[in-house]
Length: 338
Ligand code: SF4
Image 1 (tube, rainbow, N blue to C red):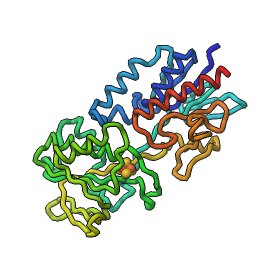
Image 2 (image 1 turned 45 degrees about the horizontal axis):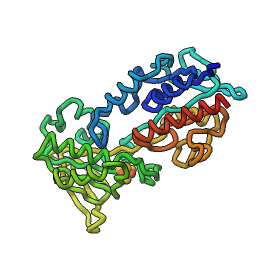
Image 3 (image 1 turned 30 degrees about the vertical axis):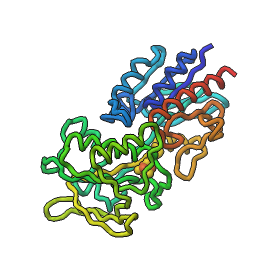
Image 4 (image 1 turned 90 degrees about the horizontal axis):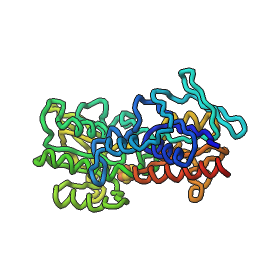
């Protein structure tokens, strides 16, 4: 007998878990609040470490989406009610459905860089985020507010991550390698530009990440400065002036750039937080959901029939997110067919 599973969020985790569950014989409804599935990945011009277009990964997952999966887009989940082991999922548009299991795969939000007021995002036009830069890469043109190609570009790591003031002590895991990838792409588009990365420490943990870092230094002469940005301002010529503490030399540093890119970290998504609070689910101090057992039941919540996949339990790269999604599908299938 087919059991009904509702998957919340059609990013890469939601797409993968839905197809896997459908192949395992379950009836799946996949709900996405945006008009199109694919989450953040669909908007990412190129992924690390191999620069594959994000849209290509999403298109493949969509093409492989099992035909029996009911995909509903443009509907945000407004509530989940639990009665015994059954769930009713509601959206704001008078839509509701009951399910034997629910999977939360609502992904993450990027840290709102405006909260770090001292960095100047939302104040100075030439201070942008890593997500903004991906859009510029997609447009094929990198320019300052005056329409000139930037001659000097700075990347600031750990924006909204590992930052007590921002309320996020954790590492977002993917922004170091994203900065290195973006710095290389920028140098390829603008070979004459000087590029600086300001980092606390470089966390290049994944396969081929280290090679990318070496390429950035040796082939592209990207300069890595260990230091934290304290503030940015604009001088009379309109350039962005950075005040940085070089933590290796123990000296303050002042440097002007034409474009400043802030590597915004990941945060628990507002939709997940809403569901979490309405069902009284356990959360960590950093707001991410806490699974039943971090090692042995990483996709299982404390409520029977409620499961987690992807970045709702903490920052993940795409490879780990997809593996987590398949693991969640297996956990759900085992639960439904126990
Ligand atoms: S991955 Fe790098 S930039 Fe991102 S939070 Fe961790 S240390 Fe900072």
